[in-house]
Length: 455
Image 1 (cartoon, helix red, strand yellow):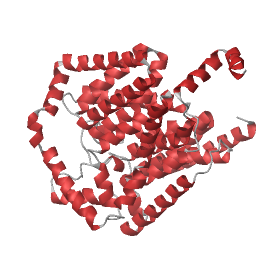
Image 2 (spheres, rainbow, N blue to C red):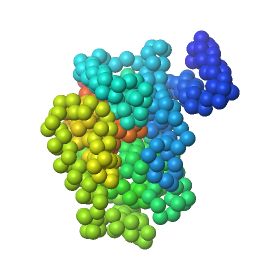
Image 3 (tube, rainbow, N blue to C red):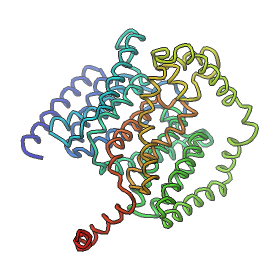
Image 4 (cartoon, one colour):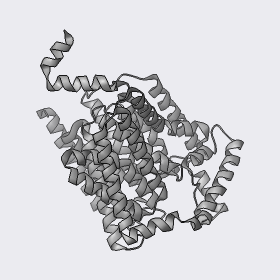
């Protein structure tokens, strides 16, 4: 960092700290929290550069906004304004910083421009429906809109070096918080500090692939400990959708590795999966939780009957206004609360379609489509770039949970999906066939081989 930039950073930090002190003295804690977040973000940007983007996204996603062991409809002691500001700062501040310092540019994309215009249109639609900016300061609304914002901002940060460390740190934070909650309140579901145990499960499966990749690069033992701890806490979260997501991610990874013929990696994954399953089955309390959640009597439980009602209600509502829906995020959840004992539609895709129509579903689905297109391209070419595949698997995991949960209205999940999808949208065309990739690796190891190949 040159002297001019250093002085600019120090001056900005001093000004923000002064404003934070004034806000605290004036007894405005929410304003002070916002200013402290901005101060921390500016200092992080100065130290991390482009790597600040994944760190900002992941750290905001894993912050425990809610009470640790209780179900609460709203964060405790934290203003909605502060949370919405943190969600907005995470993608926008690194992006603006990169623009200011002349960071790496990506090629303009007509499809990205179209996505930006559609999200701008949806923002205007939500504004008109709700009737004011103040009513849009809500984590559901901001989270949904920032799927597009984080996706578009992420396209500027094509260097993936920050994702492994950030993903591993975020996963470790989630696991440590989960252990603390399990010890504090034995027998209760783990994950309320993320808003709800299913949200916790989705965050864990979203960060698990990239976190495990980083851990394996450091130590196989560390990777095994992380995998085992994750398995235990996913069981204690009692989130069946997260269990299904973990299985789907594993099957996709096995298909990719089998296509490439990587028997060593397949055997290692099989051994790790066997270790986790053995640990769960061999531990009485964990096995009991799994057995209860998967038992036949649950087919007539409240969640199952509510899900059947949700499908019937959603299809009826979508038929009335298929393009733009009700025009406001959360409409379907409010209607469900008025008509049933559960304030949610147990399918994120149906929920967002009721609220924002097929256009809203299409733009919210873009990161998932990018991840699926990336994985299909990898299968076709027999390639499996580890870090990109880890990001794609994380999106797939969250997408599976969304089939059973309103994931699109949880800002933490929206940030992760949008940011990972934006990065992959730029990297997807850089995949090379497996044979070419092995040749490039060999050339890097033996420069003389490159000369012979050229001749």
